[in-house]
Image 1 (cartoon, each protein chain N blue to C red):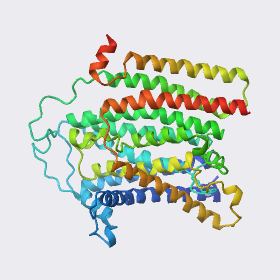
Image 2: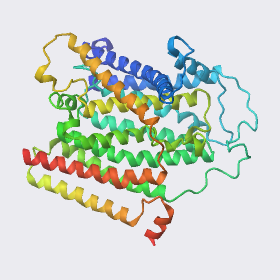
Image 3: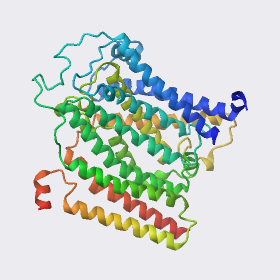
Image 4: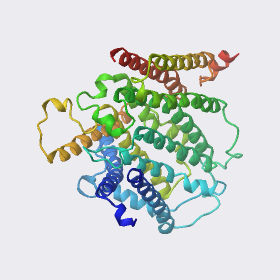
Length: 127
Length: 337
């Protein structure tokens, strides 16, 4: 156990230290001449209009919700995929039914247009 | 028990392999930047960088020096802590993947029995860097880039996970070494070509490479999530992108092109003793270089998708296809049992 995970821990420490060193190095070596205009968010040369953290499209939330459902499905698949040849027929067909149900769910959401980013057809399908 | 007793030869070997792997990965990122510019120049009938060092080979070093000596601008209204942490995340996660990748027979940092899960877990953490960078900058272009990145990387992680699951079906193990050894006779690309195609496309999307580079689409979002980044903070995003190119190539090689095995090697390869290690490393790196080249080749050949096309490809083409591919492979293996 120790022999397996100790090298990974060492690598993690090295990676973090490397990232910190790169970060600090440019902070030390680079010039520092901040002024008000330089520190503004870039907006193609115009003065920024309002705050950036405004409302954004609900479709991004829908993608996140769908992702959780299907990512959990994938996580369930891995242990089954390792051992499925040793299990009996019940376990095999149970997983096939599980995948089919989620596949049908995916087809339903696609037909419903929840993941359709072309706004004209999306509005039409949701109505 | 003292610390010295814990440092067994096996542990020292794996530490050396991890050190070598991380060193290779960092240098490959620099080489990939150089290769990208030279190949792009070749494809566009230009010369490309050829002034710094022989054939411009020292160009990446010059680039890094320049970036380190530039001013580090942090937007006044941004979140300064998150703005500083965000570029470190993709670099750290990219470096950590190298721990479980076998470079040759016995040349693996840590032969975890859950190596495939470890790879998926670590690579999917990379999305945090890009998304937090977009949010912390408090700039509209950066926020849009970060949101797009989150949605895109989540969407393509699913077909990628399903494609890897179909590899696990064939290998019957979650250990990366076992996956490679299961391909000694027959590479999985011959058994599972659809899985390979899905994984390759998803790997392009996960690395935010053209045709999936909407995350930083220069023509509409200026620089996307790294609009407000300068100096070495920008350099770290740049470094991470090219490390992801190398890692994507390594993963394609490992999962579908037999890792360090030559095709059908058990049938014709004679016993060459200790030279086998050198051959293994050469074969593995050769395959990795080929796929890294094809990443660059694709970037300078294929135009960018529109966002709705990207989402449609991910959710209504690749994901159902990958699920059906998984079911078909499972059923065939079950029938042949």
